[in-house]
Image: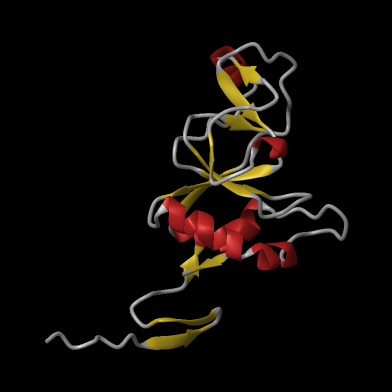
Length: 158
């Protein structure tokens, strides 16, 4: 007969967590990417250009508005190409909307791209969804707040 293992917990600055887990800053387990502010004038390529309206679930791979950019535009404008598996998180206006990229794509400046290097991207996705209130609390401004890259880097994660 197997004995039931009892889970032990510890108190941390963000609450009670399993004893063998740690609290760290997001930048210690992820690479963060901030897109450029410039918007392309032409959308006749194959790489999706995403806006907040394009996110409506856990995964994202296409532009609902039919906006796509060429490799030349990406290079000319020095746009950030987010790799597959990046967790996109809105960092302005409606803060905390998230999705995981299933295709390489680019976005407007409403997002920060968080590429997990030491944490599972689905865990990160769900964790960020539970942190909407905390994300709003670290945003600058009262109307249409904004979270800087530095504030995301310092954000605590278990």
